[in-house]
Length: 320
Image (cartoon, rainbow, N blue to C red; front, side, top):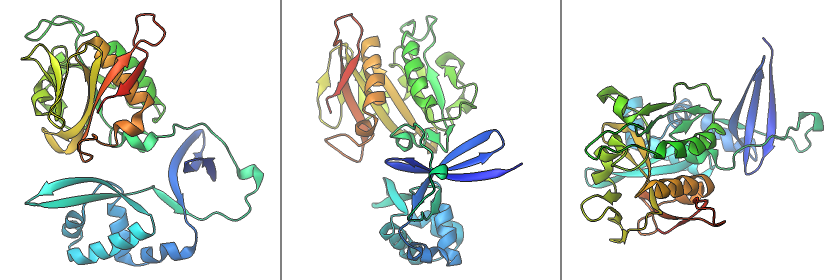
């Protein structure tokens, strides 16, 4: 089986295209300015530390896994940051201190000659913000279970979920970042068992229609308050949002699996869930940039609008 490689011009990201037989895989690549940028990788320890950063990790954990002093890890972390080989991805509180997690910016590194033959230049369309969906999408693969509410009457409210149709637009959005090989991609909330709560989860629909959303809803920084006329409440701004067109998008640690995350896309009513989906698709970079009252928390409140007057929500603004 032959193997060819190409560099794709895809601003703002560049990709390394591996062509093997009928299969092509596009891998994000960092093009470095000079060989000097790689000098810290010639050290065996430096290379091992960078390999550990293929997935989000903090210096303390890397030091424990490699059996080295934490200061040695910090030395290389600082060198990698200066060379722009890694990026900060999250922070979490540990024993009264803040642990900073880093990840390699790309999965390949290389250099580009000043002049590249046109025959090697390929232009392909690619989603602008594909990396923004990590860890729910990773390396071209769906890395999560999508859970939608059952269309049959279920739960304390005997609700029939109509939110699942919104998931179709979201699935098309996710499909642009994946190779489409992960099947089946979803579960009905009534089918979910304890083992299914492990790993990354994407929950579509509010707590009355999706019983898994209902389980985590009280723990969210922005949640749907079912006790006071069903409204969205933000613990960050202390504000309530009562319009049917209000929705939320929240990403939090999975309480059933500390190494994974949950993405909740829900609304007060069906219109709100649709607004949340539209906001996630059209404003993904802003959605994952953090709440304006606390940038460390990924939680947004949105409002949907019917811009063409046909009775269907087709646009959304971020309220906080």
